[in-house]
Length: 251
Ligand code: ADP
Ligand code: MG
Image: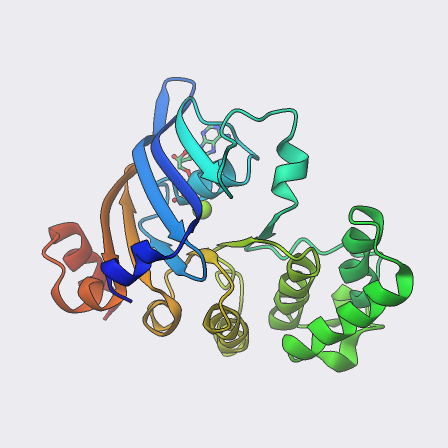
């Protein structure tokens, strides 16, 4: 978990000098972030600080005005035409689940592999059932999303993202829409994936998850990455006054 061992891993994604404006509003200001293979980076910070925009720039749902994003060794920041092909190598999990309501859980998971990756139906089904085991809802394969709890729906969304065999998982406040009793079941699945080596960027305020699963924690404010520290340093000895006041608000 220290900086020396991290830099020894190849970088799945590295961004530098990222600037993004919406009209006159300068949302991201010279942001830089390294994501080594197998690591989990947590991004925290107040609402409106640019966390979602940063994730959307990483998976090319938005395009940066200036700066570099190198994903698996290739500069992708301006790859508008190849955005879809690049994006499918990243799994994205949103606050609002965004499952297809007219498809069963199994169909939600097999749709992408079958239609985008060209996996045959039997293989897609077998892999989906294995993923449902992994997210601990094997009995829900034939159910429709509306019959599931929020925590179960979010775990289906995670399984659906994993079915595309992503090189990088992106989570945008995945537990913010959940009732408190369901947060843990989602956090547990995410932490187990991180512990198994899934490279991940996680926007969350769940500091229990961060302590357990993050290698580094990034704190954003007003479009600026004000701190980027190993997890133990972030919690125990951050000298940054912004980080300190954020941590004090949590207790
Ligand atoms: P966070 O996820 O940290 O809450 P966001 O990245 O969603 O922050 O938003 C950062 C700022 O950018 C906010 O002030 C938000 O209103 C603004 N913003 C986000 N998306 C757009 C957009 N498409 N057009 C204009 N402003 C936007
Ligand atoms: Mg957001």
